[in-house]
Image (tube, rainbow, N blue to C red; front, side, top):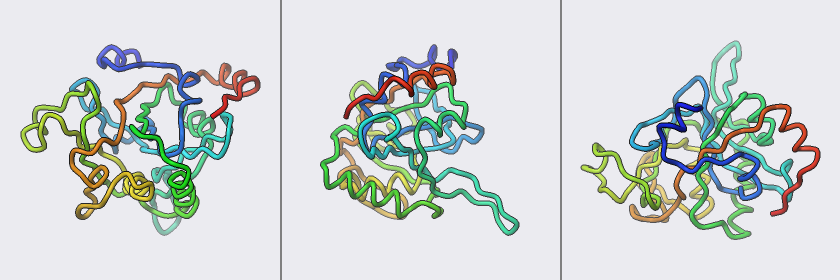
Amino acid sequence: MRGLREKCELKSVGLTEIERHLDTGDIVLIPGNHARYLVKLRGAWHGFSACAFVVRTGPGIDSLLLCHADTHIASDKESRSVVTLTPLSREIAEGECKFVVVRKLAKPLRAAERRHVRDFASASVGHCLNAHANILMAAATGAKQSTCLSAFIGPKLERFFCSELVAQMLVQAGQAKLKRNLDFLANGRADGQLLDAPVIAICPTPESADKRLKVEAPAL
């Protein structure tokens, strides 16, 4: 974690500071053993194992759920990744994460859009939707596009790599539209604003997390 923070001129905060600001539709990238999703952090690409979106069911930490399509399920006949909907605190504890990367929606969802996302998450559990997708959108304020991509999509645009599940969630929320195959456009336009700049959220230790969960219940 220290090496990553030294390489990235990004805002770094404790997860406890950002939890109360997380809402349905925000995106959380979780590191792990498989670099499936690439995120550019100060000119260098870093891989993450899971690309999840937040579902908030009410006030308080326990109401924050993470939905992603990267939970590996092995059986006698096949091995596949399926969609799960898990409390954020449990997801981070089981993954023994030291940090995650948060990308909040540039514009909060309306009540109807949040309902669409919650319904989509519930209906997707158990399905396989982890094909790679990407979304072309306006680069977040202060972000710099890599030279190789700038030649093709312009210096003020960003290509966000995610899963089919996350892309379809953004469609359900009215934030993106399918262009072709698994290529999507933010708000139906290549220069549409979609996500804020990445924030590194440092996860609490198991001891501090247990104590915090007992005494803290941030409101929406």
